[in-house]
Length: 421
Ligand code: NAD
Image (cartoon, rainbow, N blue to C red):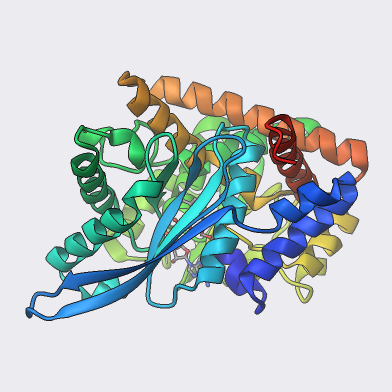
């Protein structure tokens, strides 16, 4: 949940702990269990000497945090970022723990990071850094221990190098050590659109509960990258929703009759932006958020719905594909207005769920067709939505608090059954 980091200028790990504290209080969580859940189980700090193309040696700092593996091997991405900090990695590892638990994957949470600027490094330097990182953390990762994945500035190619390095250390081909790999080395069908597809399934469930007919329902999407483009394509293709507005960094476009997402994706590919898409009128990012629509999908940045615009939000459902698009103050305002928010770590958990499927396929050595991935993803997301919805109704809390409660309760129960607390 990288977004949450910047949303509030506070130590990200303190934010994660505060969120846990709030849910623990609602759940009446045992003090001992709570204390264990406030800290990462394990973290490894490494120094990585890498030979640069000019012959010099540069030493990079890296981390791997394993937050809690009560429910299964840790799972979480590796970030290559110049401003990486251990507290960011700790917070992200905590959030991964809750995300895997809310969709009931048999996985714990982890995260990794290397302080570096990949934009200034050559391909060969990046490959050497990737391999050095795996050499350094190799003994604590593995298909049954901790399974990394791509994250900020790490790519399927980097996952390929890392898998290769781990396989060399292990002495055998080990695709299950890492997910987000290219298909040729054990990647999964259906990973590309998994985040938006998972989100679409949760919107369908929300609409069902709210009595909203999806056919022809209106939708506005902020952000037109991986998550936003697939959200537009899928919300139209699966449910015939009318996508009336989308935006990117350069601006937005609006059409009362609905945009053609396929043509719009093609247009963005050719021109680099959605701006001036034929048959539309311009709309600002701010106005897009305040449209009266059935579904609003913030799919770009953190902290875009705040106390200053929350009272003007008129959507019926907020599909939080971005991480942390809403501040806690905005959350309260929307809840009081009766706007139904599908919280980020439930709404965008489709990506990690298909990563989980990738690991399962690697471990079995048996690969599924795309339709099978979709069907299994639907079942997981639908069940997760219902669990959170029932918790929200049962405790009269908002969906975000309920999602934390479901996740934390599951991790706590696993710790208790294993006799840790
Ligand atoms: P991306 O980089 O592919 O796309 C981001 C899009 O947002 C771009 O179209 C960009 O133009 C747009 N954007 C940036 N600033 C904007 C602004 N001020 N106003 C409007 N649009 C703006 O990123 P992505 O992978 O689609 O991720 C988007 C969000 O979804 C992030 O918060 C990310 O953490 C979250 N997320 C993505 C995935 C995934 O699988 N891709 C999974 C979980 C969560």
